[in-house]
Structures are given as C-alpha cells and as structure tokens.
Length: 489
Image 1 (tube, one colour):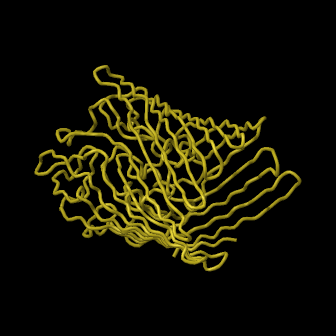
Image 2 (image 1 turned 90 degrees about the vertical axis):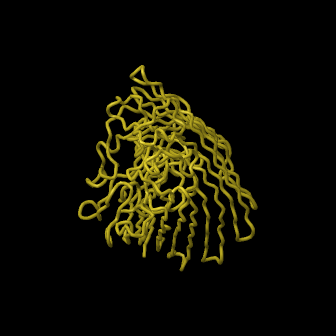
Image 3 (image 1 turned 180 degrees about the vertical axis):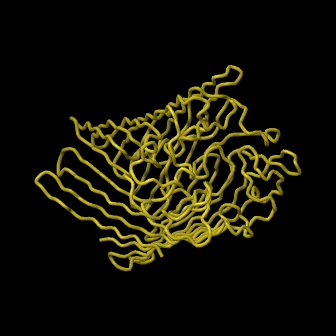
C-alpha cells in the first residue's frame, strides 16, 4: 500500500508573522504491465515496486502585509515521479532502467525557496527557485521549477505578472545529493544560452476568471549543442506562445477552456536551409454539471503536430521549414524539455501520458517532443465524479486518443502512412476517508491499443517521429495500478 502522512504545525507566532511547518510523506505501491511495449511476452515490461515522496517546508508568512519567505526540501524520483525504494523484477521507462534509491540518494533536494515582498500600491516582487504556471497548465511552463523572478501587481479582481527565468541552471549546481540515474533519465544540465520571459493577466476571482498570456523562449545555443529534430542548423531560436485560458464555476455548472498559438522562428546558420517558423496551436475545453453528488463532464483536447511523408520515413530529421507541433519548449532544442514544460495533471491520462505518481512518463506514440507533452494529439474524453457517501468518492474517465498528424512507418520495407488511431483508455479512481486523519486512495488505468499499434511494421528501429512498439499486428492491452493511504493532521 502507499502511505501519505501530512503534518502542519505553527512553530512561531509573533505580532506580525507566523512560521508554519508542513511535513509530507507518501509511499506508493505501483504495478503495471505492457506500458512500454504492449507485448505480454516482454518480461521486462512489467513490475511492482514501492516508491516514496516526502517533503519538509517552512513558510514565514506576514499576518497583514510584509515579505514572505518559503523554503521546501523534497525527495522524489526522476521527472518528479516517486523515488523507488523496493523493486520486484525490473523497473523500466522511456529513459531506461531505474534502480532503487539508497543511502544518501534518499536525502532531500532543495526543491523550492523564494522571497515574495510587497513594493507599493499592489506591486510585489518574487524571486528564487519556484514553478510558474499559467491558466490551466497546458502552455509555456509549470512542470518544473527554475531560478527566476516575478514582478506583479494585484488589484483585487485584476492581477498581472511579468516573469523571467534562466532554464537549466537548477541542474548545473543541483542543491542536494547526487543521484547518478537522474542524468541517465535525461534530467541533467545541458549547455545552453536560453532565457524565458512571460507576461500574463488574470481577470476575475477564485474559479471564475479569464487569463490572457504571452511568452517567449529565446534560445541562442550554438547548433552543435542542440538536440534538434530539424535538418537546419539553428543559431537562434525564438519560440513564442500567445494564448487565453479561463475557468467557470457555479452551483450547477463548471467548465474550463484554453486556446494557444505558437509564433516566432528559428534562424538557420546555413543559408542553404530554410528558417524554421513556429506555427503550432492548441485548444482545450471542458464542461460539466453538478447533479446533486454526481458530476459528469466532457473534455476535448487538440494539439497540433509535425507532418512527414512516407518518403521521409527513414530520414533522421525533418527537412521542412515549419514547426507545426504545439511547443511549450522548442523541438529545435529538446534538451530544454526537462526545465521548460507545461503541466496539467488533471487532464492527463494515466497510461497514454503518464498521469500518475508511478515511474511511467507516457506510452510511446508519434510525436516531436516527449510522450507526456501536449503535442500531436487529439483526445476527447467523458467521465464523472461521484460522492457516494461523505467518506467515499469515486470517478471514471474514458479517453479516445489519436494523432493530429498522420504518422509514417515501413511495411515490407516500403514507406507508408500509418493509422492515426492510438486507442482507448479507461481511468478510474477512488478515495475513502476512514476518519479525519486517514484516507485510502486508488488510481488505475487500462489501455486498449488502436490501429496505429496493430500495423505489421518492418521498421523495428522506428521511423521519423513514429516510434516502433510492436510489429506483430497483435498488441496486448496495458494496465497500471497505484494504491495509497493518506494521513493528515
């Protein structure tokens, strides 16, 4: 089982300040099968393990007005998933095999620290190591912390922020014990010359607001130090996003929406190659209703992706001049994906996109970025939450996933278009409150492979943007289960 004790204590009380300590600890029992290969014969694609995630946080908060200081220590595993401490069989994800944490690896990192101080007339300034999230979390940033600074003004119903961070610096001198497998999983410092800027404004309060935003990832990394999926050697990349998100909530209805579009271009250092223009776009909508204790909802997500032809199937890079993939970070330098990436766990399916606590970051699928990124995907879903009793709640959601752009592959050594249909996934979850201190939790997912995974492919090494999973034509379903117990005081 998994255990999650949470403790909060007021350590110090003065006339102007309170010092609050929060303690969090969670262990997870996770089991899954076939989530990387969709092949029951692959004995390495199954595991059961126990993982942990714990943190200690101190928050020095003013009672009325004044600077606030926050410090948090945390231990988790690669990609902010849990840290395995016991593994039965083998634990493998898209980054390779993961070993259990031991010794000093179990000590916490400096996860977050910041100072937030008022200036004048609603103006404030925040600086330190923290995450920056916009609207519903589908665009720009929010998945990872960075060293940055925010200038903001809060006028009650209107709040705007101007944010800056320097990507990847956190990994260069990571404040905590060294964990060698972090680098093997891709979470390490990559030499770069990039900066991230964002401006957003929020109109409204609570769960009723709209939030326009615009951001820019300006990357001057030399072409030889980039992880670039395009053929053009890039000397400068300006990957921008403009968007609008919002929420609506009343006594009977609730909803969310988000629209975003990329702009800017990557400049080639070789005049024989075209510059790469960013043209990706994204749309999301959710609508639901409260019917007593029953809350059904529907969601729709569309994220554009890059196009390739069957003649390009065995190419190693994209030769065109447009990046059509919706990009929170740029495919002209994928090294930045471990520091600038969107975050929206509420809309992420467990298996297709790695939406749980367990060490699984998504099913391999046609893409330009990572399995867990909102890119090259069309995904409607329908589901519900049900409060059975005051103690027991239950929910379920059915996702249908397909690629935005038609993928390519090889059949009988000939380049062909493959099906866009990825498959169906059913996720289900439950929480049971034993008492005011103890909550039992469960999260599970079952994936039914679609036609893309059923092709009898001969490109065992994969094709451009289209990973090879199984070429048998008869893929097996995949499942993942997570159990938890949460204690709170």
